[in-house]
Image (cartoon, rainbow, N blue to C red; front, side, top):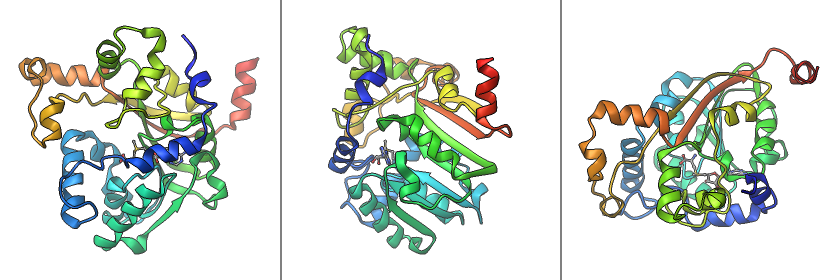
Length: 293
Ligand SMILES: C[S@@+](CC[C@H](N)C(=O)[O-])C[C@H]1O[C@@H](n2cnc3c(N)ncnc32)[C@H](O)[C@@H]1O
């Protein structure tokens, strides 16, 4: 099995941008006219209904009066909620189409003056956004889609002070979803696993890059930071066919499962690997030196 880096690191960021331009994340979360107030309201309602852990993880109201940097804002569902809660937000994304929708949303909800949107490659963020400290750096479901996630982490450090929090979600390799992809689409071809995950990770097939991580893997990615919390969430329990018709019918096997067992399953084999980290008080170079000794 080829390492994921070998498959994804050579890809060009333009492929990533083209993919997300062709279908911004959650674009079909509502059948209402794209860009209308009702459309954005329905997108938000559906997103937080299916992924109720997002508002809990983001803790929007905690950031009132604080500076938030969001990396990979997509069409701005979380962005708007940080702004509505009273945070001053800088939101970046590589996809101009996603940003167009996010800006439109900010205008409609009267938040345009407290959100700065920037089109930027997060791997080179300092070329686009002046490096100054933020209270929260937030990135949900983004850095596993870029050729060099470790380059984004290096950039993130430049926007943190000693009390800043970094909240990040990446995909969980040891998850129900990966098993499902492997069996349903991959017919068990485990040696193709990383390519299969990328191909089927999103609503639109053919995502060019999707890394996935174990708990040890995310800790390694965040090395040099103090990881305060890592947890796993989210199994999608609904039948896809009904879901595309905006109906929520659980697959029979999840429907039969008592809620308590379903939650256990989610918290162990969910698709979202969430972590919170702070800058280590010690210089990462010193830590590396200690490890090498
Ligand atoms: C799955 S979507 C998540 C969007 C948003 N965080 C949400 O939860 O709705 C991934 C987003 O990451 C953005 N992205 C991927 N690589 C990026 C990079 N190197 N720099 C900036 N944005 C990137 C994509 O354009 C896309 O909007």
